[in-house]
Image (cartoon, rainbow, N blue to C red; front, top):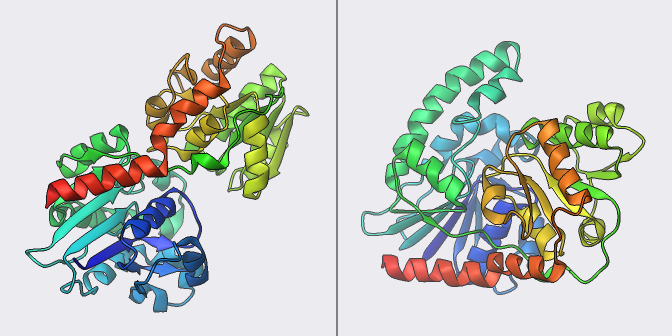
Length: 363
């Protein structure tokens, strides 16, 4: 069986790339198709057993593609349809940006692992539009309408959908009118030590962009006066740094060793945004840290209220403050070993076993 894996782009190692890397481990002879990539990074990340080819679409040949690839989103559907997959029996698309719209043989099998229907053209469309101005805003509005039509129609090219969470499965059902199997993405939980003593600081870890709501964490801890460390970079960094009190430290982007150390020592991870799945809370739990999470999206699925963390049910400063105070008051007591055991259900081994079983059942 000849296998092709189609991923949107590979310019950093995040959750989507962890899934893609695990897929290649399962099918090391597969060819990997990407719109654009940093090939050295890809080869360093993939298993040494990988013997397939890395192929890019015409997007990679356009000026500044490695930096401005998102500007070329309007022509990515066309680029996908130029990929010749007639030689492949199994096609696995990894979808968050455009990836599933490839053309395949009638007798081939196309499985789409969907991290998320494209947020910027569906449920978060108005949020993205409100942040734009002038011609960029007008162009995006006109283009997004066409992109939604293509995205919906290209869903019919997929034989089977896998969703990375129940939250994403519900969005696949809403936007594509398709059923999907939920297989949680792989998290490298073995890298974390849950036995270290917890210290008296809280941690926010993630990009500093609007929908992740780092502003809630900063505002809440300004009022609480408790120590908060913020790790991440993004468009909100300078504004958050100005409004943060002396008890809040913004560290910017940090290497994995620093992140690992903070997750293993923090009193709790603060997770105020809505994520499709959210790998960071699972990494925190693997490190034995409880998670204070907004009860929507992936955080509602992975964090067990009262066992591995605390849910708050309104995306507001007041609700987050109340959740932190519940932990501070001793209303909830957490066991790091118990939290770490819960994280094991999101391991790479579980992902690989579930995915291969799904493929076998589809044959």
